[in-house]
Length: 130
Image (tube, rainbow, N blue to C red; front, side, top):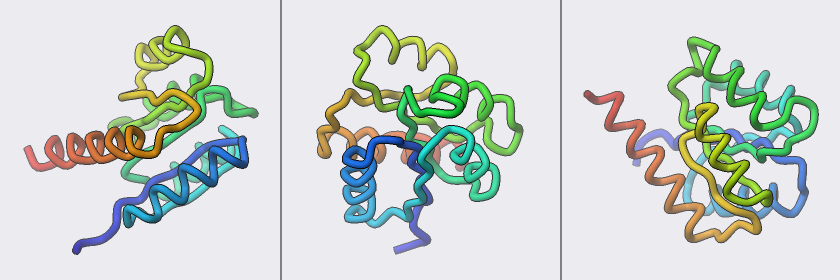
């Protein structure tokens, strides 16, 4: 197996952060965690992850603000972003309009979540190979 994909989780809720982190670790991904959007953005710039998973309502620079910042940063602009939300499809749809690639509703269904993660990473690999 090659180098594990790096995934950055930006999540303020302890339970969600643990559930998402454990699911990704069990799948063999390298996981970094930030508890708010400011630390998350700084971590993204430093780590250049293969995928960013962010809570749409992360404190201190929420998920929507983070998406806009990431898309404006040349070294991160093409990084896939998966948004998690308990706010329903309206806010999630808005996050897609701002540049997110996909969203998963909370509470997180680990199977559906991992399917989306795998799909985003595969799409990203396909684009890089083209």
